[in-house]
Length: 243
Image 1: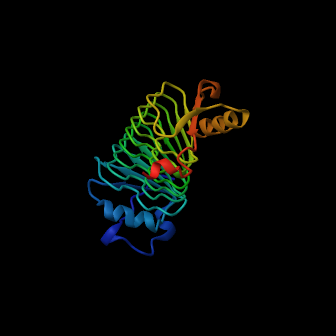
Image 2 (image 1 turned 90 degrees about the horizontal axis):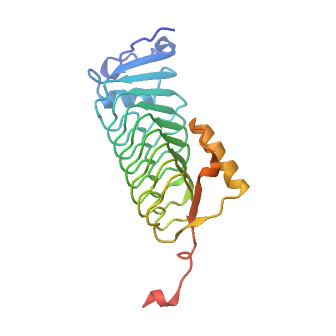
Image 3 (image 1 turned 45 degrees about the horizontal axis):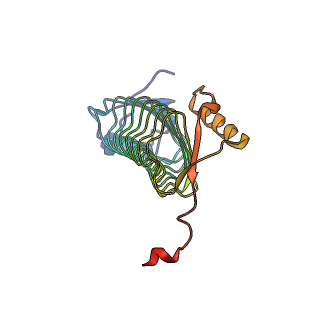
């Protein structure tokens, strides 16, 4: 079916229903992000293309339905934040907090991501084909993140659960104050954060990593990666720390 343009916002017909067809194109040069997100929160189509984002913030934030959304261009802060069930693809780079607090679904960034990618994410899969800046995966709570390139400092800070795969190098402070998240790094690692240590790669971990790489569409050999996680020294009270 050819793409159709459906009025959204003040001019929208609330009874449009299936008239929207399979694919709707939205031009942010003429439509506000508020109007776009209102449509995506009560979608009348299965697929959306968003054009001319031009760094707009909060594009496709708070989506709760299993729909496909393509963002053609550079996205600003918090793109696909709080995503639940949707599949969001950014054909460009993304600003601070892409997929922040994501619950489920999939988000893919074809370019690079700024700070705090996937921060506090509870579930779903975030794939960044390029590199990510500092604090990627900060306080992650179950999300899976795969980064095709490098990450900056303090990634996975206080990461509680989930898996972070880094196919390039990792900056200083990786896994600082980490809980039970699993970290896999293919390249070099700077100074590890507090309570983060290198761990052995068992068959279970290689199988887990292979599954994550396949889900991200990458073909790296799991044997090329190292694993990092919590030493669990911060879990327990020590009397000398109370003085």
